[in-house]
Length: 198
Image 1 (cartoon, rainbow, N blue to C red):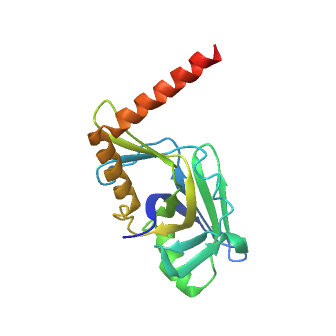
Image 2: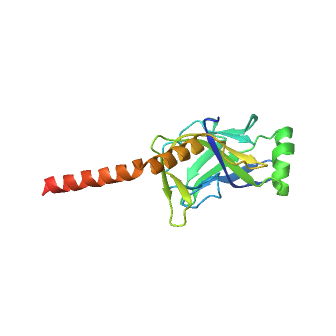
Image 3: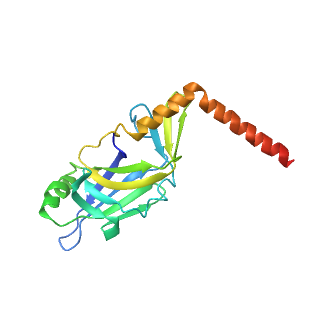
C-alpha cells in the first residue's frame, strides 16, 4: 500500500510570449469544501492544514511521474502559497520540447486542466465524524508532509492506503464503543477540573 495519498483540483497554463517563462498555476487543495466520495467517506481540508509543510522540498511533476519534473520549491521553479481559498501553486515550466509537447500543448488546448497533490497526514492531524445524514466526513487539520503537486491528465481516487486504514480504525472504535467512552471520559475530566477550580 502507498504511504501517501493524492487528491485533485483545477489548474491552467498561462502561455506567454516566447521570451517569457510559461507558468502553470493551480490549486493543490481548497479549504472547507467537501470532496466527492473517496471510497466510503468525504473529506474536508481545514485552513491551517498546510502551515507546517510549506517549507518542505516539494516537487511538481506531470501525472505524478518522477521522470517529468516541472519544478521544485528548493530551486525556486515551484512556488507554494496559501490564501483564503486554499493551497495555490505556480510553476515555471521547463522550456524543453518534451514538456511543450507532453504538458503545455495539451493544457493550452484544455485537454489537461486538473491538478493533484500527494501528501501524508500528520499523527492526530485528522478528525472523523458521521454527520446527521449518515455521511462519514474526514477533516484534515494538519499535514505531516507535502510530496508533490502535479498537473494530471486523469485524476485518480486515493490509493487504498492510510486514509482507508484510518477510516476502518475509526469505524472499529465507534462500533466497539471506544469513541463514546473517550468522549465520556473527557467530559468527566473536564467536569472534575471545573469542580476543583471552584
